[in-house]
Amino acid sequence: MNAADRVRRPPGGPAPRTLPPVPVPTPWRLTLALAGVPGRLRADYTAAAGLVARRFLFGYPFARLLTPPAWQPHLVTAIAFGALADDLVDAGTGQYAAEAFSRWAGHVRQALVSGQADQPELRAFLHTVAVRNVPHSAIHAYLAGQAARQQVGDYLTDQNHDDHIDQVLMPSGRIAYALCHRPGERFPAETLRPVADATQRADDLSDLAVDLRRGRLTIPRTTLLHYGVQRADLARRRDTPAVRAVLAHVRGRARTALATARTALADADPATQLLGWPALTGCELVLAAAERRGTAVLSRHGLLRGIRPSPHGLIEGTLRTLHSSLRLAESDHDP
Image (cartoon, rainbow, N blue to C red; front, side, top):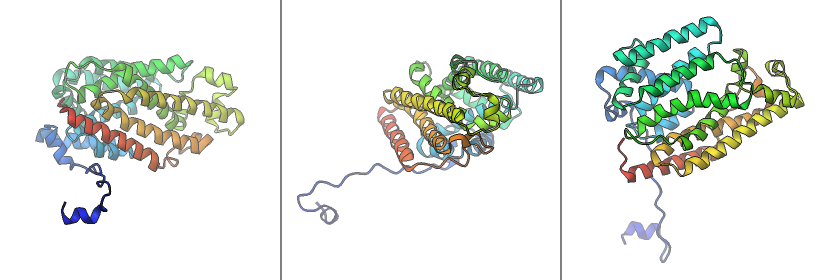
């Protein structure tokens, strides 16, 4: 025992606890090198990272801190690809908006064949698709699902909500899974389907006010009918017992989905956990804000002003992600 040990440990006392290493953000240029991104494309990947950082103010730093550096450029460009598609789909349900998305989707399909694209974010995505062996079928399914979503102004029942997850989020999950796993590994739909459900329900709450302004509503008509709420009640931000009840129902469904997703993810392989835990941590932040805001989620600013990172939620999410990261390192996983 050296002198330092004698100072830190009382005679006969237990050995000092070893704290887990504190993650340090890896410089972006180093992550690009670790991911094997060639110099000619690094500006394109950086453009994709900038888009994601602006869109996901809380999630981007968390992901940069806790996911393996070599994954980050590929994950970022896949998220940027989804954001580009969402922007076009969310522009509206009219003919002009549908034609704009159709043109962009056609450009993507052609780019998958030619390997050439005009948008820097799309060029980065194409490179990721090529080097990570992302199945083109998942991309085509994702584009078809987004096109179908653009034609839907609301959901009739919860089944329509589930159809959206199967048509859009599950193909997106297959893309993300391919980025972090070896080719040929079985896609764990039974694990990632609950994660997609929780993520979508949190997004529904986060985007409720914006969707209403755009003519879209993600609360099924059957749910509104059950509580005696009209779509106009939500659009006009009426604070009534019925409106409060329907929002409480939506939050409860989201809470249940989040609990189910956590249970499903607990037994997954560490690489899949590293995909899922950051997303579920973001869901917790959104749901906590929705619970605090009540009917104010219908206001112009929605949840933007209500999201306050919870120390408990962030610590729990960070510890879960760190544990998965350590398991991943021990397994010598090299996708």
